Image (cartoon, rainbow, N blue to C red; front, top):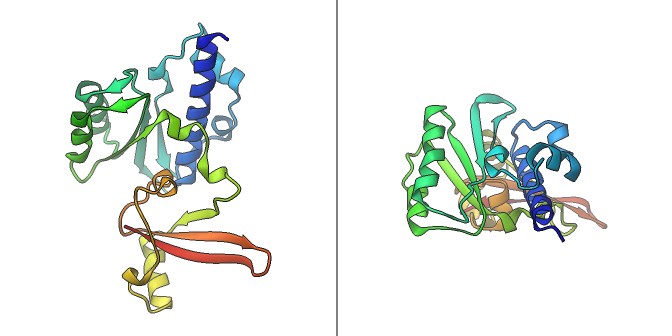
Length: 208
């Protein structure tokens, strides 16, 4: 098997899941990007066989707020250190992009992770290993539909049921589904499960 072809197939799957993920977070993604097949991906990003990871970088904006932008990037380095990470952090600052997602190949150094943790509060940067995005976990038959509530919807929920947020069931911010949706501590997610006896069953969880 051609190793370049295998790598292209792998990155196509990761690239596709990345677009599905930001779409599910409420960012504008075209249908053609969501539906891109392997041949189209190869023609666009690997015409000579090798995939140029720099070309995979993309920026999206929220459906309801064009200033809320997100930079998704794929560093070339197998192990991402401080230097390549700072290039993208500086780009976010220069272009006033508040959020970023780093999709790395194998690992990130401890120093690179410290850079992420030390970013000013107006910027957030998440990281995913490529292996985590080979398959969209939310498409698994056993994973129910999740919807992240806005702060207003959360307030209405708590008021309606006369609850304190600490009374809600919890979901860890490190949970794979929570990470997929970019859940932050204090946010509430609505979970919709199909039930043979009760029709649709709705529950809520607080991210901690």
